[in-house]
Image 1 (cartoon, rainbow, N blue to C red):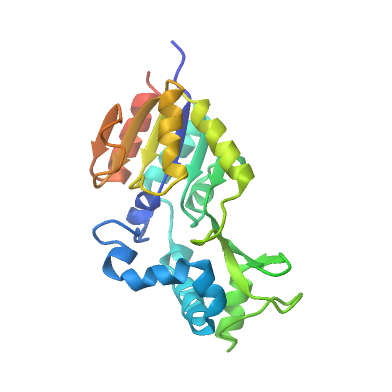
Image 2: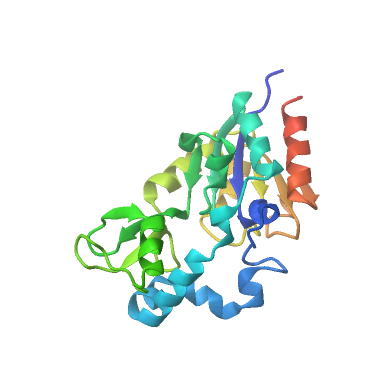
Length: 242
């Protein structure tokens, strides 16, 4: 019997054991401080220089810069090495899947990443580290060096469109797997949460691994509740032993 092909959908919960707080969980960033969500709205960001300054400071102090992959990230590398991983569709922007060793071409960053910076006017790309160095040098709202436009990280903010090419690839990954494993996500943000429906309608098994209830628990074939860094490696061991 052939081992199943697996697509993995990951949310912020997979990175909490790496020291990065999630957003909507009991100890989430937005749960504790609902106003923090304003930093992630593109219209607010573009209109308010003071909010941009606050946003850049939050980026500079983001624990993701010093975070290391945990056992959950590393287990997905094993899945890839054994030839069973179709894709990782991630809602995270921290780059920990690639840091763990997952092939960049296997990682679909649905919400972009925090590593790159881009100009909203001319589209020029640079690195977030370069922008943060300018902040540390006293420029609290660094502008594009090419055209003077507003800079932001290459994350998809509320009010922005997701990349159609990434969405198409994610849809294909959900349709092409035997098992869709949804990890560390409340599965409340669409269209990414809808990949669970896509996979189920294509005949895939849906397994949810999360620390708290999700919107898709009732339709999942299996729900594993608890520590993601413990549960996901155990699930991968099971999937690779089928």
